[in-house]
Length: 151
Image (tube, rainbow, N blue to C red; front, side, top):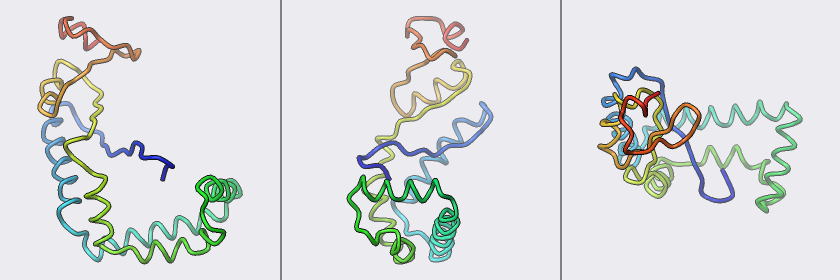
């Protein structure tokens, strides 16, 4: 986690013609994570995966250094990493839902889509204002024709 609230990402690669359906499903999943408790099986698998990944990372000197820096930066207790796995294993479905409700707000998400603006802009506009950028990262003026904006 970052010291202050920051970005998180969820995404996928899809064909232009299924952008609309993919976004519908994406938002459905965000709402599901907030509204439904995670299943016991899925939670157990996720916790085991996190703990196993953590255990493997202890074999990498650079990761160990990063853990020490993180502990210092955030003022964590000296035994933080010693108790990390147990804390992960103690996370409950209620904890997951509480945090999801606090931090995942589907009405405040910012979408980034890469593709042909002439084909996906109208789909994205269903979710709010749309800014179009060219391949060099420059904002394209809203009054330019769609053909120019998508190049």
